[in-house]
Length: 118
Image (cartoon, rainbow, N blue to C red; front, side):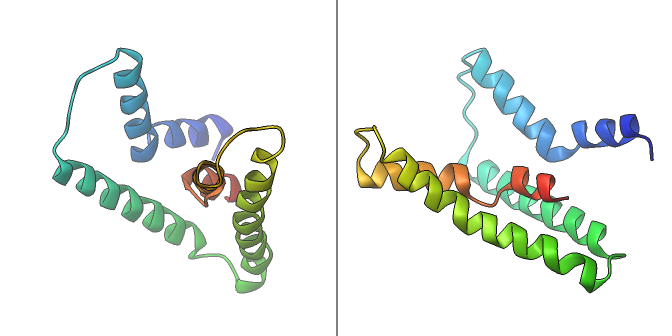
């Protein structure tokens, strides 16, 4: 697969398109409100798409090639929120709860971390 075809397939994937739709709606200060059931359905759909894409990518990989990146991902998933929590306490007047929420949000293992690990 060429780099351009990989880039195109990643850009037209469902998670990226949903993110783009949300970004455009926020950019235009849209007042669009979706029912809670739609949010839940989109969340479940995104989680399934991440899991299926990851599982499909891992089906041909041997365990020995999988262990080191998996351990690195788990380690970074633990270290990044801890680092962010303590770094946000330096020079900031953020409360403990705010520091914890920022660290958990930005340091969590998410689609971005998953994509970077791939």
